[in-house]
Image 1 (tube, rainbow, N blue to C red):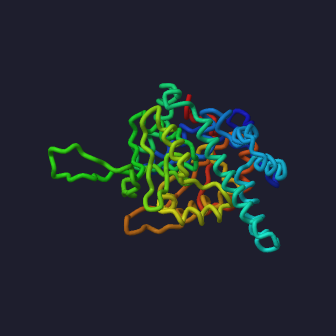
Image 2: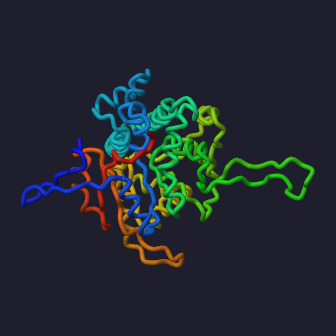
Image 3: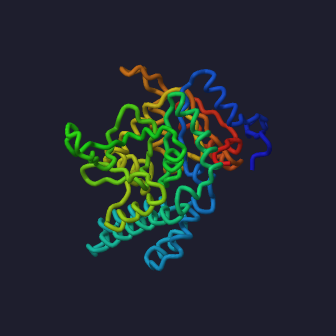
Length: 360
């Protein structure tokens, strides 16, 4: 673990002692310099709420409890608890089977296993949530809202790669502005003052005022084939309604399989996801990350950040991205960020993520 607020960077000349910034120092500096900070949340945001349920290990434990022999065999063979790794290997195996196998049914069976794994992952995420929004205490909800408020009140954007609905719950329950680009169409005649207004589902309009972006999709978002629909927040019944849609054969907008390139391909073929990705490419000022480790499957996120950093002032008078502040929780996380620092074409700063008061 990080020792106090000091870290040691190993170099040819020995060890260089340097002090990590704490989170409050980062935010104060950005606001003082009017940087319009934006926030990128990774799985660490949900794990900070409860590491026992919002982790790949917990998802693996969920699958282990199922009676599905195919999924159990797959995880035993590849010996990993990372869903994305398994999905990627299934993709590769499917391509090889189609090329070399004389059994024409084999690629179809692999595809079935891929769909089954994706369905299990979605079910696991849904099942492991708190039973309903009010299981999150007032203190936790208020602390999280306070954590996000400076970004939303200073022209920033909030990006999340999480599939769960913790962020959505906090935004709705706390009364924070939830400008996620969705809205309702009026279905009846608006000129008929005697009738009760009839509205559509929440549809994705992609309004310019959008400030919340689910980069990899989320449980409440569904693609009907013609529209992107958001299951509406209604307290205790949100998860129940999501489950009902899934039982009817609908599945949330969801990006999990493959490496960064595969993810980007999936993103660009979905109107909502591509709009969110382009918003990240258009981010300006400074970007603060929390719980995002820039792992092997995040090359598309690094590419978006680099494009934002190289962007010239456009017709909307947006400035380019000037800096990224990455939160690290441990020496291992620090070593990893140092190992991928060369991939970024923007100034990288590190801060001690343990000093951020996200939930408590």
